Amino acid sequence: MEWLTALFVFAVLAGSAIELWLAQRQTVAVARHRGVVPEPFAASISAEDHAKAADYTVAKVRLGRIGLGLDAALVLALTVGGGLAALDALWRRSHLAEPWLGLAVIASAALLIRLVSLPLSLWRTFRLEARFGFNRTTPALYLADLAKSLALAVVLGGPLLLATLWLMERAGRWWWLVAWLLWLAFMLVMAWAWPAFIAPLFNRFSPLADQELRGRIESLLERCGFASKGVFVVDSSRRSSHGNAYFTGIGRHKRIVFFDTLLETLGHGEVEAVLAHELGHFRLKHVRQRLWVSVAAAFAGLAVLGWLATQSGFYRALGVPTPSPHAALLLFVLAVPAFTFFITPLASLWSRRHEFAADAFATRHASAAELAAALVKLHRDNASTLTPDPIYAAFYYSHPPPLVRITRLQEQAQR
Image (cartoon, rainbow, N blue to C red; front, side):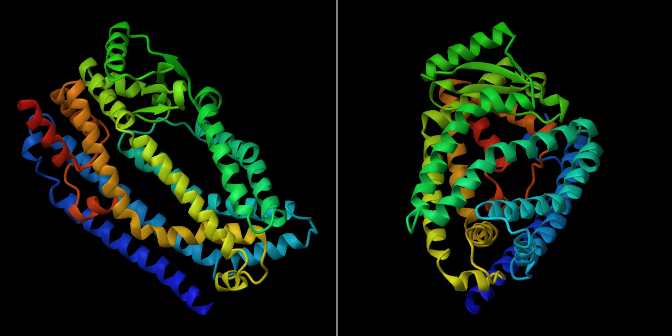
């Protein structure tokens, strides 16, 4: 399958070239508008804050370009460069039996990838984020988070991976269908367990103490017909000054979580408007649609993997001479992003439409002016650029560009 080798290398290089071109457009566009605050924001965002957002955006894009080069080089080195083949040959000397051999090879590859990305992660946290006043993570907390993440990967991911490798070896040609059902069950259990048992390993979650705000939120939930297990505040300020809010859990076990940094910044009406937007995603079934898409994508991906795993040319084309279940899994995980990258603009467009729809829902149940004011504050406090390159935004942005989104909300508020 020499054509597959050429196609894969072309996809990696073409994707990287597109990303570098888009990154260059973004840095030029943001730097060009650094000195002038867009008119709709002139009264609420200072020239100093606007310049800080431009500098922060450019710094992140430049660091991202380094990461992009490292990722592309690592993927090619592990596949057609023979890296996975070398790892596989090394572990075969231990005479481990399957699926333990496969687990060792995959764990080694995952650890290698993590080690390669570690310097950039450290730089991003302790240099870039600190330079712009966002980082509050201490080295001890960083190491603790890293250790907990690795432990969870072993405790939770290890058994799932072992079961998948066992199915690939012994469950016949339809192993992938059983693996898909196993994956679904795992995802459902994790959605239930994460907010109650796993997330508290990293952060402290406290019930919302502000009774006035709690009353407004409960009234909003009742108007929107939304059931929740509770409203919590997470101590995100231990790690960063960035603000956010999110839902977690499934069914009646859903929780509403606010970053403590968000509550320090926004007024009650603004918090209510932000929550109304998030509720819109649930009431308009956006969350359910995305869930079904991920389920369907997993089904299709495992079906393709089930066929590729039986094709000896698939292994040779991507640099592994000896077929095995673990080689099939690793090659698939490394190769698929090179091809799915090209549908990124479609996924981004779909997500932006959901955001507009959720904004419209929020304006029916809360104040459009408060939502616009909240978004302005979030962009200011998170140093998000107000002037992205249009093509870059169309390709990557899961949310509408701020100028378009906030202008629309302000017009709705005036009406």
